[in-house]
Image 1 (cartoon, rainbow, N blue to C red):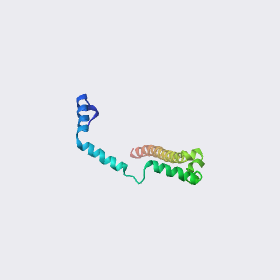
Image 2 (cartoon, rainbow, N blue to C red):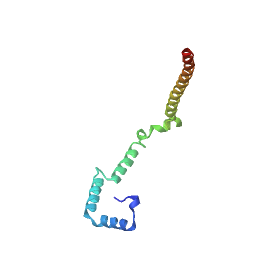
Image 3 (cartoon, helix red, strand yellow):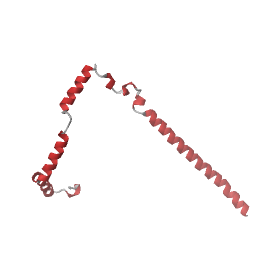
Length: 118
């Protein structure tokens, strides 16, 4: 493996020569090529099918995205983000308020305890 910090001209040339001359790399490339080419149908045939399908079904309106009928704030999910933001804000506000109240209550109790000791 060639790491970014270890790149030198000699190392790069050596690794490229190794890849070009070692048959294991060619074998691995051919294997992956065969996997990629093993398809049910060719991409051009698939494209032709979908074009013909759209023509047969008058533009295939049933395949169009329903998002085109949504308002922009729903399309970008801004309503969801606002609800999540408000929920986190309320939780933070409640947490902060409860901490402030606890500090105030503890501040009133500590002097009372000191007075009882005296």
